[in-house]
Picture 1 (cartoon, rainbow over the protein chains, first blue to last red):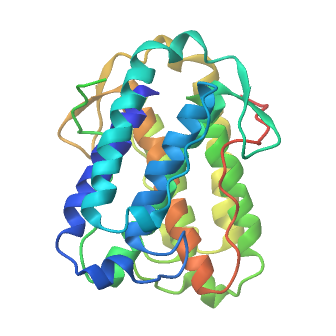
Picture 2: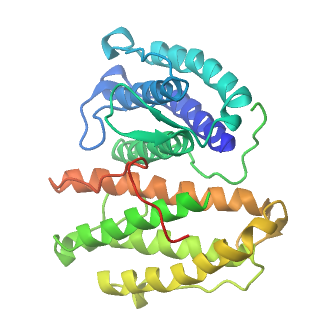
Picture 3: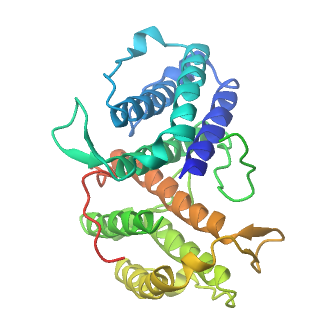
Length: 155
Length: 155
């Protein structure tokens, strides 16, 4: 499971790099499907992951407003910052707790912590698939998304 | 890990149902990104999953030609058929073997069996994200892809 997080983070960072080749207008352009723009997608996967991980830990939700993170640099910084906290959680607490149920402020149902981790993983991969279509619309090759052949080290 | 397979299969079946509302022309239309058409995507995730699972087992690859499975019904039947074999494998053999390395006919590198399973999982979720964009282009709501809130039973 932790390898999937590392996979998502590698791919996310490659998309951050990929974004450097396009204009601010292209980055923010409202596109069909998903959550809208390329930049908003990167913001969305970053903050959704963090909200759920805080939820698993029974911590209060912190709401990030996109208007405060409306450049590539700001979203990348946010992603790096939140990742540190998530890495600590995954390394230490998570594996003793995964069969517990938890409730989060934005959902009426209770979910098993393990189920939430899988939800976070699938959520990001799904949105990355959407970016890949939009990149082809821009006539650019998307980030290569294979899981095999990657090196996973830090978790 | 096995829950991710069941997740992918539920979503895939919901996409097969979703496809019933569109025309054969829409199903086969060449679209931007991914592997092309909606139907070819469903064929592709089905046969790629099966090839890797056979590869993990050291079995010879079976190549399916899309021209033999060029209708929604045929791809759905193929998916159902191959799924039975994969389910048996996941239920019985896999968990004793996951740290072994294996080579497959279509790739020069060796991969850990566990890594291949994760590759299969991410591969399908990624392509499903692409379908979700194409569905919005058709002004149709995509299949809901949340992992949480689903019931997993049969594996």
